[in-house]
Image (cartoon, rainbow, N blue to C red; front, side, top):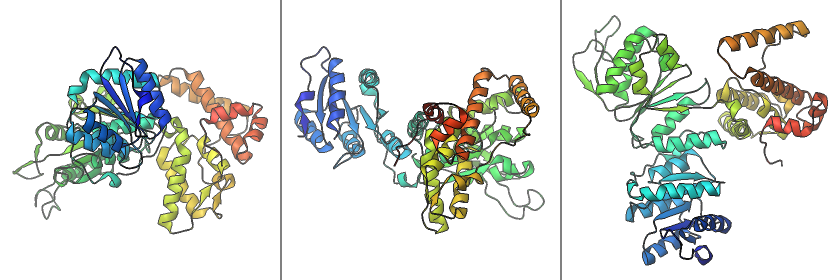
Length: 480
């Protein structure tokens, strides 16, 4: 059945028409019913072909919801065809697969919004209400790009990562400066790569420079280039990173470490798009999108006079804050399995996999080094674990733990007191809750390690219920 007559509303207060395209009849039914109850006239279709056939016979609706993965043409192909013939039609793309390629592909194709499954029906109805008054504002579809598969892999299905994927999908199409912030190892360069590869600049260069890794006296030449004879050792002309990235994207990592004199030069390039090479007289003009990243508090550096406020305003048109891995623990199993598979492929060895107990232990770890630390652990395990199945014993030497000051109660109390004093001086609030969380997490991690991931036994040793262990571990996986 290509169209759901059951999903068609009776005459309603709001006569505007909404179409729902999804091969899952239950999704079509519940969404159509909710929209009908809100007063809209709704039709449901089980495929892109059925919707396109109705489009030719009945004309376009006022709003269309479509799933991404369907038999035949998928939702992104349907989106392209709709935008080619009805560019002003607002389309809301729905999918349970909220990766960068899906979200960026939807927004690049001209989607009005991306709705992650499962979604709240009230939120979907509210989104329809917000979208319909602005139906005439939907932009033309952006030119398609072939770089979707070249996007570096960002992995995660937690709410924080879904929000990040949606933001990347939107920002990739806008020629705005982006400031990426987050702890070391959270994947800031991966986000910059994704913003570039999903953008209209994807066929032009992506050039990255870690400003903290270049000596201050050489950084100016690295950024802007130099002419032959500009300084001792400059035997020939050197093309800087800005010229290398012309037409594309320049990623400046650890921007907080840039010396103040260079900040002034960078500000002019961002404002005017022009500069001189070191020792040069030729004015160089470039078209470069700058994406910057830092783990430092730039607002604090501005207050200390170590970073220019006007440069921060130029860089911080849009800010993306990346969550640390400990705040998205549910993503750890998927990340670990992906890193392990990648490592075994590159090492050209037999595939390995994690035992469920090992994944539990990985998920319980605090990961102070974030995703980068997890990736390094997986590479070590791929190379050193003796069996094809990695268990908790293999993890004992691979995971890093905080140093222990000793077994005496006085030493432990002293270490806790020093930690509390430092955090309070830093201005921390709700310290009791933070301390409880860290204590619970440490006890759980050690108990799981000693019981080889057996939750029931760990609960007995800690004197708590198994449900408490499961809750503190966070959302788990389906067990095999």
